[in-house]
Image (cartoon, rainbow, N blue to C red; front, side, top):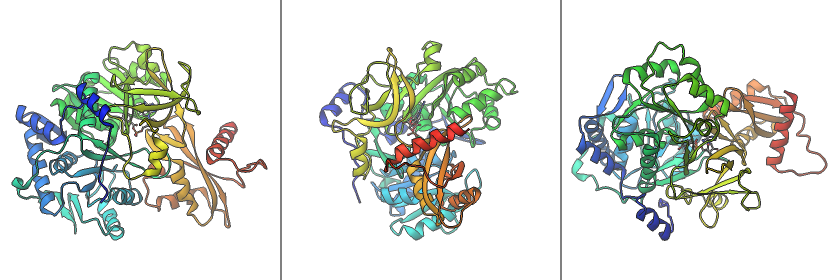
Length: 540
Ligand code: J2J
């Protein structure tokens, strides 16, 4: 099994420790500390379920002992695909406690993506729910997964397990549990938005990740009194760490789970639990803003609303701020690879409305370069690169991506085009690469083109992003047919049959005779996609 590592050169690691960013804390270590301080304080709330810190810890230890009893070992990777349910927390803290490594999948992922994570992480186990909030049966997925992944030793199911191992039945000898992990070791694998091809795995260490949400807590005002509503999928990096549920648990606050981010589900929860902070992607923030003024629910407890994952335009930001006057809007521009920027709670309105914030850390190094690698003049757009105490230096097991995504001196090429204001705030202008940011869900054009090319009646395919009033961006697939001309609806239905996340199915399919690339001959895919997008926009 390939070892997990994330290595900063020693001089950097020493600097980050000396500055107090990396304090040697670990996931099991910080949760145990909160339990010792206030075992009866509420940690996780979901509907009628309320777990105290003591109960969360006890459930995590039971799960941890159970994982060991099943034959799983410290260091084993475990793909976790759970929605916003309390067991998400007993499972991941159980894995941390047993020194196992969660690989975070989103509830929307299907067999194709899960099989890729299992393969790439060399996972020993898969944890899922019996059914998702949308009714999807993950046991069927698990069956297909197992058939194609003989090394997957265990499938553990929350709920009705059928032939698999039920989480509720897990138990074992707690005295067999290992001590706390090395804080510089990899705690989990997060997944990348996937600019090219399939998602890459992002190894994050205890030290670096805990620093990112501890510092985020300070920036977002999270304390033991905070009540944090998790409306986005808990496994996503934004609701996990910016400042996220992990931030709230670190602070000893309450985490409230919403089964869906819609206002009709979330507003009653905000009123009932006196929620103080939440995070949303821009389309959802606009939906909340639209519903808030006429809502019969008391939303006055909500003091901070973080919005990020995709660009929030100044006009949209104004709408959100106006609709929730008692609540401070905070823009957040982050990435699972590391760098996170926030507008600050005491920033003037113009900064909050018009920028995507500035980095968390004084030691976040940010470069804005032209395509030749030279710094652009201040205020001009350029490619954003980042290096710092919580930005990775490499993906797991992917030399090709590493060569492309990191400079020799360790900067991560974010793929984002940004400008920097004189005050050091970043304004996102777009993407250098070809991915579609569909309401915060990142879709790689290349990955979707690959699927389309597997269709017998597709000669060639190019997938582009198109501006969309609600989603921010939507996907459009241009297809040159061969043989019998397929219908657009049939292509979409066929894509659904590829067992991929629904958000990856092209929103629009356009059949064309050719891509009209001229005699000038070969052009890059990137150039081709740009031309097709321009043509579509000109015709609209
Ligand atoms: C424009 N683009 C944005 C923003 C992310 C906090 C917040 C978000 C993420 C996230 C995250 C954007 N305006 N405000 O992990 O901790 C786009 C950029 C970026 C990519 C990263 C967090 N906020 N983006 O969205 O790994 O293109 O993380 O590089 O999913 O989302 O996507 P992801």
